[in-house]
Length: 224
Image (cartoon, rainbow, N blue to C red; front, side, top):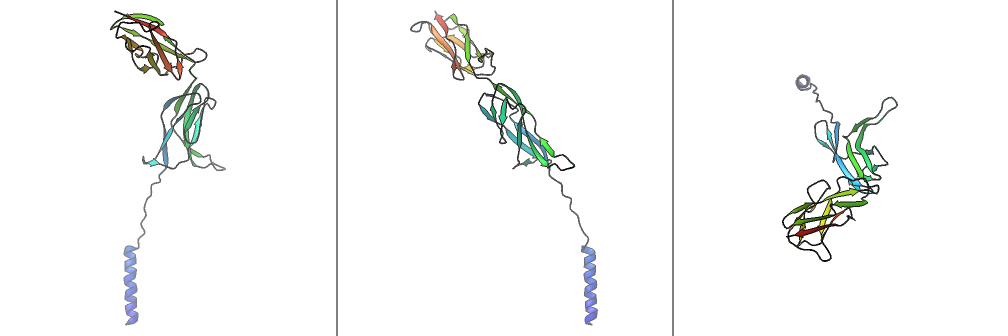
């Protein structure tokens, strides 16, 4: 009977293996680096000033990918340099394109490397401010009236530099109030006569300051 019992057990085992021994396969989706986006898309710095660009990578499923070794590049390296940490430094006045890339597959003897490159960010490097000229240089208004001042910010060659903020001030706030700060073409620099009077030594002095440079003095008189 023992041999018969053994045969029965073997038959049962064979049946179980036949029912449950079928192989199953699981399809695994490969996650690959899909896109790299750097921000900001535009930036402005002065010569010898720096700004940091940030790279964000997404895989083919739209999930963030971290711990990547980025290679950063400046298209005009005489205008600005950029480190592999995304820190860009202005060298000379001009414009350059900043990108970040990641090599996902190394080059072989028969195939080039596979590289994912980011969008292109534009970095503008502005020259040092050499002068600020405000106008008009002399004006007279009545109490309650306004006078609009404008400021031209220029480099050493007298060429205007756009986008530089200036801070307006005057020598006698009891006589004249003036709007805070802005760029040369906006509505700031608007002076309002708040009282009748002449500052000690002459009319109220209006000035603008930007990037550590102080403008010429404009004179404003407020009458009754």
